[in-house]
Image (cartoon, rainbow, N blue to C red; front, side, top):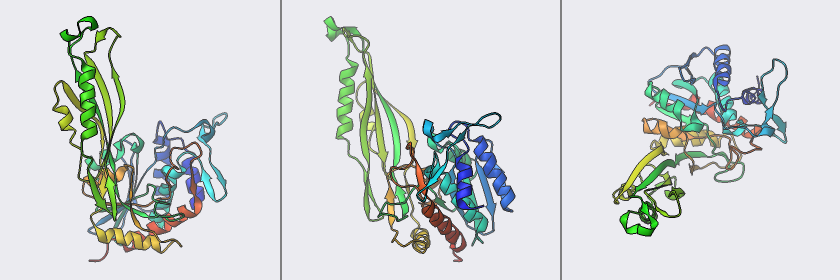
Amino acid sequence: MSLVDLTRDLVSIPSHEDEAAAGDFLEAWLRRETDADVTRDSVGNVIARKGTGEETLAFVGHHDVVEPAASQVADGSGDDATEYAVEERDGRLYGRGTADMKGAVAAALLAFRDADPAGELVVASFVGEEIGGVGAQYAIDGGFSPDYAVVGEGSTNYSGQDVTDVAVAHKGRRGSTITAHGTAAHASEANAGENAIYRATAAVDRVRDLERPSVDAAGERLEGRLTVTEIEGGTAMNVVPARCTFTVDERTVPGERAALERVAALDGIEWTVDQDLPAMRCTDEAFAEAVLEAADGVQDGDPELVTKPHATDAGWLSAAGTECVIYGPSEPGEAHTDDESVSIGVLERCRETYRRVAQRWPTAG
C-alpha cells in the first residue's frame, strides 16, 4: 500500500466525535502489516512495539480531528456510512485530517513497518488530542514512557518555504477563569453593596501589569502571553452586581508561568484553572541533532531547529520525562481549515525521515 493510499483510507474515516472506527483501522493495519506487539487500551489509543533495546524511540500522533466543514463530508448511501471527502490535486491531498494529522500518522506507520530499529521502536496514535490530550494523559498514567519521541505535528515551512524543520520547543496554554465576588444592592444606594465589576476591573488591570515570562530555545526568544478574552457580570441596570467573571488565555513557556496568584490575592477574587496544556522543550541536544541530520538528508532545503507556538501531546510526554521533538508535514495555518490539505511530497519526506531516525537512534553508546 502506498503512502497516499494509506493516508486517503485513514483520512476518509470520520473521527471528530468517535475515534473508534479509525482506531479499528489502525489496529487491523498494524496486525496485518507487521509482527509488532499491538495493543488497544480502554480509551482507544493504539500502540505497537517492535525491536529490543534498553532505550525506546516512539513515533507519536493522534487520529482524532476537529469537526469537518460540510464540504469535507461525502454522504454515503444505503449501508455505506458517511465518510470524509478526500481529493488529490496539484500534488496535495485535501480533506479533514490530512494535515492534522492523519497524514503524519500514515507516514509513521509505514516507517515503523519498514525500519530495522536500533532499539525498541514504538508507534502510538492517541485519541482526544484535540480536546486537551486526554488520550496521551491516559497512556502516560498507564505507564507509557518512551525515552525519546518524534511527534508528527506540523513543522513544515517554519524556517523557509518547502523546508520541514525540527521543533525542539513549544508553548503551552493555561486557561483560567477569574471570578470577582461582591455584594448586591440597589443602584440608588450603591454604597450599601460591593461592586463585583469594580473588583473585576481591578483584577484585569493586575493581569495587564503582570510580567510575561520568556525563555531562550533554539536561538529564539520564546515569549509568554496573557490575554483577557471574555467578561460577564451584572443582572440588571439598576442593581450593584454581586458577581463578575472574566477569562484569561495564557500562553506559557517551558518551565515558567505568569504570577496569576497575584491576581487571586486581591480582595474578593477567586482564580480557577480550567485547562493547563504543558509547554515542551527538548533538553537532549544529541537527539535533536540526530533528527535534524536525518531531516537534512531527505530534502533540498536546509532544515533548522525551531520553536512552535502551539501546544501538542509532546507537552504531556515531555512533562512525564520523554525527550521530544516535533517533525511533521502540516504547515502554519493549514490545520482546522475548511480546505485543509497536505503536500504528498512532504509526507514522503516525513516517512523517510522517520525511518532513518528509527535505524540510527538510540545510538549504541
